[in-house]
Amino acid sequence: MQKKGLQVVHFTTKQRFCPFMHCLFYVSLRRSMKTHTFRSKPELIAILVIAFFCFMAANCRMDASAKAAEVKSNTSSDDKTEGDKSATSAPVKMPDVDGIKVADPKTILGRPEVPILCYHQIRDWKPTDSKTAQAYIVPPASFAEQMKMLADSGYHTILPDQLYAYLNEGTPLPSKPVMLTFDDTDLDQYTVAKPIMDKYDFKGVFFVMTVSIGRPRYMTKEQIKDLSDKGHTIASHTWDHHNVKKYQGNDWATQIEKPTKQLEAITGKPVKYFAYPFGLWNPQAIPELKKRGMIAAFQLYAPRDEKDPLFTIRRIIVPAMKPAALYKSMRQGFGYY
Ligand SMILES: [Zn+2]
Image (cartoon, rainbow, N blue to C red; front, side, top):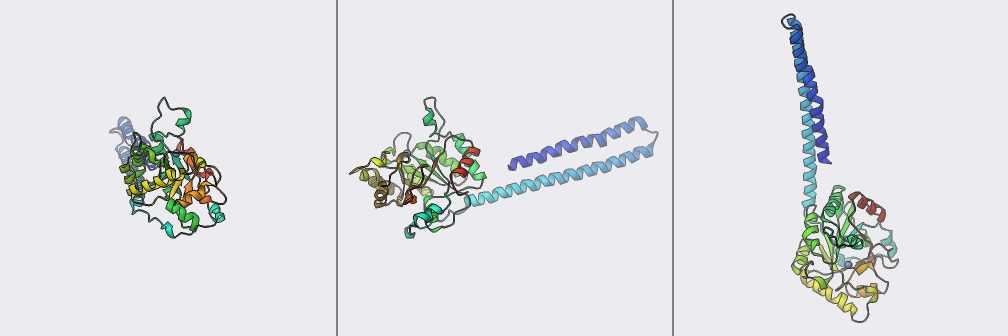
């Protein structure tokens, strides 16, 4: 947008003043020299004087226009500086969620929902990718466009602790909050998505499936630790992506307890948030997750549970859609914008 403004000013300067100069100064002068030379000196002088004033007037207008362009340019760079300042300012202080009392479901359901986006792989499509697979793969160029749109539209990324404090206590959020979440531990989330997000100082939530850590095309322990150290949230997405609706006996220990401990050992921070594999959940899973230290859980786009909305927080899967379509989905799918 800033660039466009400057281009308009440049276009106006060139198109309006160059022909004006040619017509009034050079052409008039040449004509009068041809037809009246040496026969009517006062007329020639008069034309020269008029042409001189026209030239000065044109110059003034050019100066004014150039100044306007300069002001616009300065304003733009000021805006940018201001934006950069806020983007690189001290990290937002995360609320201490330990002391927060869980609000009643009606209060939580009554608050406008923050848009939460769910990504998987950030890479170019291959000929072998099926149509279904493509829905979970966002090419880097498309991801970059989407992030730019969020930044240009004034969105601020928030993390689960902020959402938790907001939903339970009404703690204010930054203007235009959005949450970026990444499932399944794919390596390109670290190598491709993170550098793009860094441009805007965006932070995300990485739901890690621990069985994949260190495997080819997945993140390593060190990369997960780096994400955590840089202010992103590391959260649980089970051991090997089994559907929680089918857990029995030891499954809770295998899929939730052990992975939580492993992620806590990697990051040195508590793991308190969970994303259901395939977005699938049932009411029986919720107390099991609570028993194992989770304080909130994320599904996909099904309605939230009336009794436990904190354990059925909604997200939308974002495909390779145009920024305008994403903007529309966010406004239509969630109440907070
Ligand atoms: Zn998953």
